[in-house]
Image 1 (spheres, rainbow over the protein chains, first blue to last red):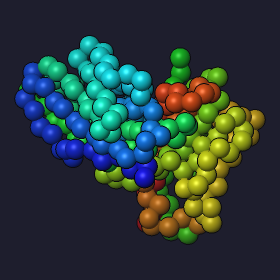
Image 2: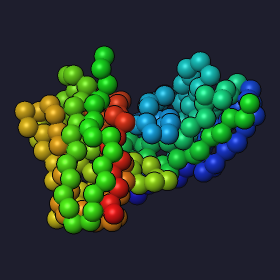
Image 3: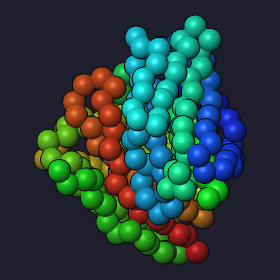
Image 4: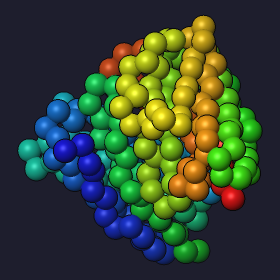
Length: 110
Length: 114
């Protein structure tokens, strides 16, 4: 179906460590995979996205990988900082429609 | 550029009352979305507009929810009558026209039903 499974639901790391969030989907029509960061009381903010014709994309400390054969994709944050603490959502999209995962609460401890 | 604007930020009503939310998208964005985000979950699409036409309203509870986007710019989402389970944050997003364009979100309206 259109669902996307996201793990883990909570993640706690020490400042400077790396954080990895993984998502899986089942709909072969999915061709767009954005990631959103949501801080308390704010709307989701797009941090990076990847399309199905690309396997990896990097933007400074953030990277995403996509394995379309296995239908899973991941977010990697390196050198984490306290301001990275937030809820992160993976999404799958096809045509115009986005489906969100349930989110990962990332806590970066100073 | 200015982001997506939503109002009000908070609303508290009693069940069976009506409520309306307003959204002003990013200038020039043809596509507008309304999402419902229940506490602890990801946003769920309610309705999507392309200019002033509805593209997808398959998950909109049409017996109580309605939305319009007159003139293809601002949009309003209405709930009448409200139920306890409608307590959520209502998010508006907009994007440029075309497939899989990045969606930009407003900060939402937090609705509490008593």
